[in-house]
Length: 267
Image (cartoon, rainbow, N blue to C red; front, top):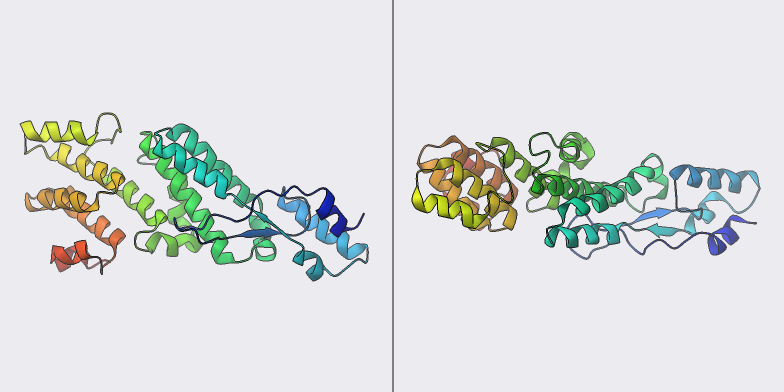
């Protein structure tokens, strides 16, 4: 059976497009040669078979490709996160990441774009890391975010203002600098505000409120609470303002409103 026939009869159609590293609908794809869409070794074996059997050139065979799509896994993970089922969400993000890692060795041959591939890896690492942190796990040592932070090819996504990778890394840095471990149940906005209502000088509660608001996406109020801490002389306030300013980018209106160059000089 020729490789072309094999692709028509045996290769399952996995998905249509790969999730882009941002939350937009712009597709990012990992394309696999017309071999079975499983391990990368299968792709290499299929290519070798095509060459040794004297069939069409490898380039022609590679034009018959399928898109290996982890978009559904990522979207399911995000859906579970929204439903506060972070334990199960992390499993979906981890599975999507394993799918990408399986073709890492051959990515230059099978990926439509190295940029798309790296961005998708960054996306999966970011969301998997967030899923663990929201569960109260790995808030200091996080296996996913540690990889995201040290892998040079992923740094552009970590540095991009408002990106998922940047958001995850910023959240991690905030949690690392918090006066005590952050907990979703103990550190809800309602509970922390009740604590501050009875004691406005509780810098620990206010610091954790910054993290809670940042996780909720309420950036303006997160910056406001961090600024209150900074003005009162609390070290976490200054650190939080720097991290959040870097996440927003120097041109963001909230950063410009700070009017404090020493807080944005590292952006």
